[in-house]
Structure formats: structure tokens, C-alpha cells
Length: 352
Image (cartoon, rainbow, N blue to C red; front, side, top):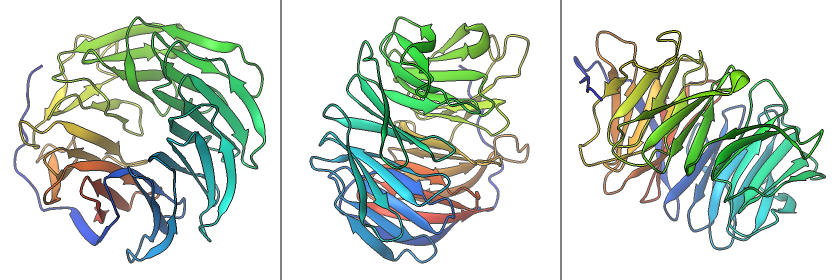
């Protein structure tokens, strides 16, 4: 894949607002929908809720025994969901920090959790199992066990359908209607992470074999991109559903999915070079309704990009000292970016 270097670095638009510390490696970040609070999970278990304007800790949650794996804040309400290696899904009151519900994930090592955009359904995966509950904690359905560990799960935009990513397939269900799949996109390989385009038309997943697979969902048509340095876990769509940013090495690779009649197939991606050559990416995040893209990597850098800016694609930079940048999250209003570090450092920026 050809590399297109950045040029003409502009004024740094990544402005730190505050920095704080948590006990351990930052594994996940989740913003409250009003952007007033930020939840930060550590790999050892504890979860801290911060005042997003001042950086003051508001609540210290015990999280999960043996480690917390993921967080998700209810998009339309005040509930914070977490999962971890104690086989539990915990739902917390985001205002008081008190436990609201403790749900059984069905297996140990619960690693993925996701609210439906309506905030009325909560899904979590543990091992080969996936369960879906109402916001009140009532079990809606346990979906059929997958062929391998559920590596990721995402709600398909604009629907009540939930897609599970596991060995050999991406399988979509309507949990409220049936345990039978709505669609099975079969692929012989080991996928790691997925991302739906915001219009719900394309499903992309990064894989163990250093490839990215695209599915045009309605037609069940697929294509594959290769040439990555490492396995691909980092995927982020821009809000127009045109551009997909991928990791799989130290360079941000951006595919134009409207490049031709066959989408990105046969096209050359834009390559954004800014992280150290030996520092693979750890996270990518596009704004929810804007054109800014953030990247994090093992070199401790958080870089801000405006990929379509002809005057210079890199528009911001921050350096965590002594550890990898491990997590990124934009607030719902796109005014703030949160970043976490392997040393336990947390930073919030204004980006603009």
C-alpha cells in the first residue's frame, strides 16, 4: 500500500482541558450523553466517573473482579453498563454511582457490551454466548451459541438487529422476534473487531490474518483488503459512511467506500503517517457528526487528523509520557475527546 505523508502541520487543535489518574491501564472510556461525565475503566477492575468539565472524580465503582473489559453508557439515559471477567454485567446509576442491576452474562470472561441507540435494550457477550435485556434488566433472549468466542457485537444502525462477530461468520439477529438469524455472512477466518457504516449498508471487520473484510449487507457481497502489518482491531467510520479508517500497523489507512462502482475495491487508500514507525495503532475514533479523526498508538501519542484537509491532514498532537495511548472516545456533541494511557493517565481535550 502506498504511503502519503502528511504535510504542512497546522496549529495544534488538540487542547488539553484536564488530566487525571486512575489505578491502572485504561481499558475503556464512556461519555454520558450530556457530555457532563466521563466513565473510565481500568484493566484491574475499578471504574471511575469524572466530572467531564473539571476532572474531579465523582464516583469510584468497584467494577469487576479479575478485571473490567468494556463500558457502555445508555445513549438516552443515565445508566452505565460494564462487563468483566467475573461473568457479570453490572448496570450503575450514573448520577449516584450506586449499583442498579447485576445480570448474569451466562459465561465467564464477559468482554463486550452495547446499548441499542434507543437505550431500551442492552446486549452483552461472554464466551460463545450473547444475552439481551431490557433497560430494566428483564432478559429478552439468549441467542444461539456461536462457533467461537464472540469477538464483537454491534447493533445495525436504523434497526433492532444485533450482529455478532465470531469465528467463521458475522451473524445478525432480531432479538425481540426470534432466535433464528436474520442473515449469516459466512467467511472462513478469525475476525477480531467490526464496525457498521452509519447508514447500515456496509459491515467491515478486521481480522487475525492482517486483512479487512467488507460486506455489502443487503446484497451479501463481500470484498477484502490486505497488506496490513499486523492483525486489525482498529476500525472507524466517518459519519457520512464514505470513509473507513483502519489500523493494523503504525499508519492510519483510510478507504474511500464511494471510490467507484465497487466501492474501495481496486482503489488506493490514503495513508496518514504520524506515529512512530514501530508503534502500532491501538485505537481510532471519528467524530460523531464531524470530519475530525483521532488516533492512538503504542508510542503514547494521540494525533488529531482532518483527512480531507489539503493544507495538512495532521491538525493536533498530544504525548502521554511513559506509556501507550490505549483508548479514545468522543463526547456525543463532538466538542470533547477523551484519551486513556497504559500508565493510568486520562486526558480530556477540546478539539476544534
